[in-house]
Length: 124
Image 1: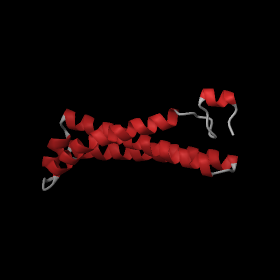
Image 2 (image 1 turned 90 degrees about the vertical axis):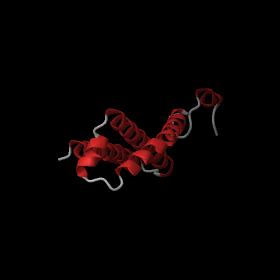
Image 3 (image 1 turned 45 degrees about the vertical axis):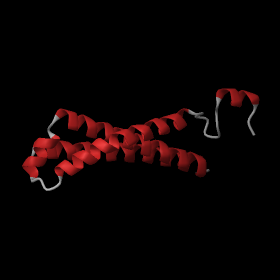
């Protein structure tokens, strides 16, 4: 049950309103739009040796596309898991610990992905 004030503010049970909903949709649309260029990049990498892959990944437009895709994916993953945690974990301490672990995990995945792309693009 919502009070009239909560309906005006748009706050749900997690007290974050519709901001997470819209961020989730925006990152989903961004990932959908970036999916075609990412698939094309992956297809360009098929059958290449490390030097060829480094040449392709060293291109600025390709690096920007991949970084945008990684950023959107990590953010989308973070928001999705946070909503699940906030909705289904009822112990407050466990909820806080889970949200913190989720944040750290998403940042770690994004950084590891960026590191792998930088490592491949440098040809080392």
